[in-house]
Length: 351
Ligand code: DOR
Ligand code: ZN
Image 1 (cartoon, rainbow, N blue to C red):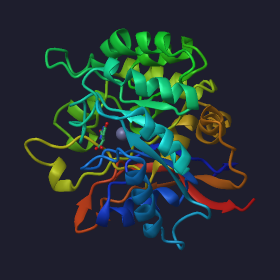
Image 2: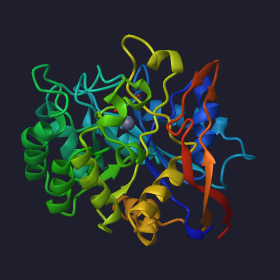
Image 3: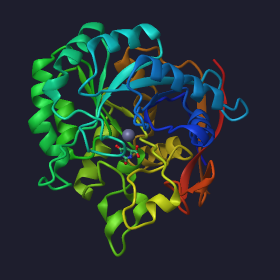
């Protein structure tokens, strides 16, 4: 048995959904994470300052103080559309709850149909974001049907990320949920204005977990799991101590029946075991002393926000991930269902 304490972490990429889903998603995340960057891919999308404010209120109304850490704070994002006006970004910043703008290439993933069809169409919006210091959060995959699904992140780097950084040298960009050695190298070698989030599932698993011997739909997410050499590059990036890489769970629940079917949805619910899974991965890499930087320092530093002051305690003590979670009237199969999780959260300490 071993205990470690780290500064309370934040989750820089999270899907909370809406309505009856919020009881589960909000409190599972708020159990550990003080701040969460809330993805805007609802139907209809959260695309105006007013939408973000209303969604923020619905999230706060779902917080259960018996389950959530004190001071839980959702950091809202806007869903960038071809039709978004630069003034909407200015308004969102002034409203005080929006901390980023999310770019989904149209058709890339769940509820992305209203996304951007050509990045040059939103250049005036990006100019304004650069001017006022609003970060751009990117789902970095091309959507062309003839590009192999395993190559979509790499092609996006070549076609879009490179030119974007050249055209907007002062814009803060988060390359979300990176999945390839190519993306890890691009971010590591890029300017200080680019950083990346890494999910627990892309650290724990590779595409064999999803496809060897049987199709396992609960491992299906986007960007899709890649081969093990990419997983190894992500492990090196996350545990290497670089401030450009930080925690973003991309916890994204879909009901069991929406995943276990002929056209299953992409997304993995992991909030109930996220920090525990990151601890397990860092431990396995012999890098436990770097967990705090990745989980609690690099994110707020990049976003220009203060680090949390209180701490959480983790213990190396195995437990079995629950087989399901209740989300409104639906059942969700969590990431670690039936697996042994090597670390658990045993307590916290107020500032
Ligand atoms: O696997 C994913 N699920 N990837 C995304 O980009 C979106 C997410 C969702 O909202 O379900
Ligand atoms: Zn996501």
